[in-house]
Image 1 (tube, rainbow, N blue to C red):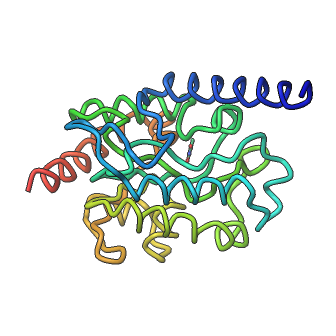
Image 2 (cartoon, rainbow, N blue to C red):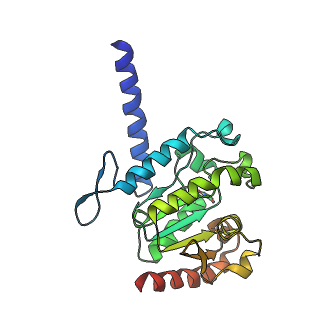
Length: 229
Ligand code: URA
């Protein structure tokens, strides 16, 4: 009995930590069963269940060695019904600690971009190519990308967004399967399995090159126009 109580206390502590981190990231809804409060009321959401089972798979994933050095996997978060999904590269230090995508300095800038579009983080979905942090934030290895990409394909299949915004070179290479520089790719919609994909600069690049914010804003305006159709 004492052992079970201890375990329960541990679970409650982890849950509280998770919910606090989510609410700091602007997420106000928690999916604990097959219904979800979603703007216009409560309705069943098979999709959120599937995302949850994928999240569990990622939590136990050992397909590449990054599970050995990660603190937390970073599955992704936001609306399971999002019309717009942002895909970044891989979790950094802050994301690894909190288990949430884009919560460091680049994430703050991404949040500002989303808000400038008239949206909130909870309206969109945010995830990465890699679900675990590469040590010292090095670039993802092809073997890591190959091991992890199926999770992203499945996330996109469940969410079924109208637009995906690829943030930076790696997301573009993986989703669009091409090697062109982001400067050549950005600004035009491309296709991934029938979904419109807008390549743009990564927010971390914008922190180093603020002059490129103007171009990213042009790309975001194209996305906003597409979503209004
Ligand atoms: N950079 C990324 O590509 N993803 C994150 O989640 C954070 C920083």
